[in-house]
Image (cartoon, rainbow, N blue to C red):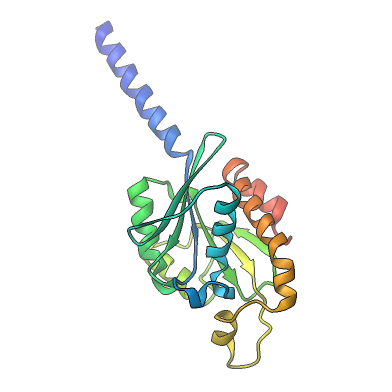
Length: 210
């Protein structure tokens, strides 16, 4: 009887430990398009933020299935960093694959993307919402079958004339934006770390609109 209880308690303790370990793992996805011609475009800000984070943490990306992947450890948390290689419009496929492979809870997913509806450099973290006409978010919503996932929107503004949206988002930063970009990248990586360490609500309160 005592032996049974010991085994039962041991199994439950192991299950609790596994669940606790899962809650300490996060999937951080920067959206963008692969290829040198897209490297410095506004639409690739998700890639750029993850590259900035990796460079400052002295880690590197390796080519893996459906994307470039890296791992960062911060205060007992594991961050799986992913730059999908599926092109923007099929980002959901890579995200679904790595969520399942890494066994990351949906609430620990953070998608980093550009947003035309926010002034340049404005940061906004949300726990749910529509795709807002963004094809990458549209595919993620389709593959995950939910709009309830964390997304970090980086404002690129809508300073383009009628009919020039595609040229604008696939265009490179102007001189004024480029001069301010480094500070915005630094703050963006701080937001990501806060999301992991302090939680989504505290992070929204601290960074949204900044």
